[in-house]
Length: 285
Image (cartoon, rainbow, N blue to C red):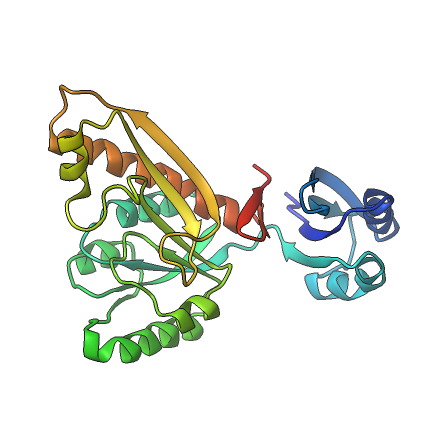
């Protein structure tokens, strides 16, 4: 099957954008398989994602398309990128001592449900070494302490650079990343957390929520920024709960929601369906 290429773009909205893009693809032997667009009237910005295949015998590459599209992109003031639709995204997973999201991502990846290539797992604890090893994936134990945080982050980036990582997933990695690291990973690091914030901060959030009698449990996946847990939101979901459920039940439901929400965010990112729109995202699901 010819998965072809994906083009994503954003620019100030004006007449003729779709015509110019479709005309370029036609002139370069592209057949559109899927297209989505969005006009943000509040900002005047236009967003588009197009997946297309090349005609049989075509010689187009990501690099050649990126270059030959320049006259179109520059004439509309676009930010644009082409991607190989068949190429899994090289990914690094970070985890601490809660392994439900890690386990879920590993299984989905092994089952062919996520278009990612998990190059390595980094953890500040050794708890999941055997789990990761069972999938044949390198595991790196990188301890973190207040006095050695900078060294730990440098080691983390050494692993990421050595593996050619393009996406970092914080699968319940319970360390706050520095401002510098957040800037280096801007737009390519996804975090997951429960949606009780800011009401129930700190330790034992499900105990706090149970004590307050919450009726909804949810999770949020977002891009990592220097503002803790406030990056552009990618996906959220909720489950209803009631008074009959104890803390253990609430925690189990919450972790299931976290698994699903994080998996969706990772999949959409890897399929290049997410475009940044200031402090928000446009997600072409």
